[in-house]
Length: 162
Length: 207
Image 1: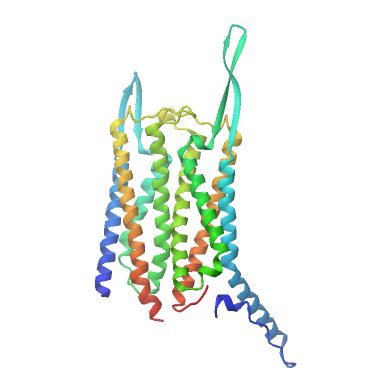
Image 2: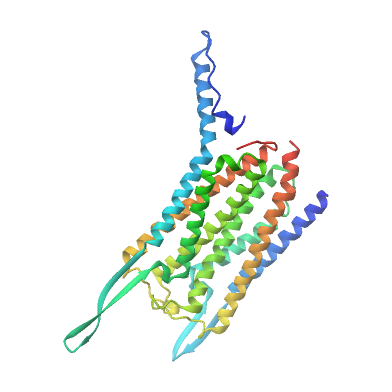
């Protein structure tokens, strides 16, 4: 039973790592240059601090998920893992939220601030960022699933063995 | 040692031969027990206050100024520019999430005695704490990213910063975001306390 739960945890964490890596890589490779009424417009992820935060946060999530597979369940380190799981989940959620806000402004603009939407001009860049956001959401979802699983399956042997 | 009963133990009458050091230790232990019992309540009250303040400050955040846009003949044409929180979806989400968190913390404070009598009640509160903390973190993150955009703009997208025109709107928004982040930190501390309490006591009754 312990082996099965360890296997399921490892599979969940690998899925999180894969989705996080996909999100970071898709965001990093988003780049488009276009000409708009004679004005050169270049769109790149590094021009927006929120997108840079997105890339860094998901890189951290990727590395963390891979490292956590090596922790033995039932040791004191696994209790620390439960705590840091929640913290890393909050980090990923914050990254997705910040990127979502900027992406919404880019897609719909903000007429009260005089900000025009840029998606009609850089169509492929917009689609790229949307893809990165979707991968980020999937990674976040599986991460919270793995937290719930850890709390349910791993914490019980911890509590009852005392 | 139970959290609920720790504060109720009375100091037994010290025998005449008791050393002052022994009395001091007992008093310190009693004080420690009382602090431990009251910690979750204080933390939760502070978190409720912080999130309620954040929601209120952002919801009442509005600023307008009138400027001359054109001059027709000799008559200047004035227009009022307004900045309100509900013009930005990110700030609307921020207000909603902080209101939810503040109401939740207040509710848990009020019906604390009822819920925490059973172990499942404590676990449900712990789960909801985590969910609401994650929601708060997303709200604060999205509002902060919009605030950064409003302050610095984005040259590449031709988005001009608005903070130079709406100074007090920006600073009030900043205060609201900082208050919400303090609420997140307090709820994280609450979470850690709940996790420690639930993990070490399998048969705990009350918290």
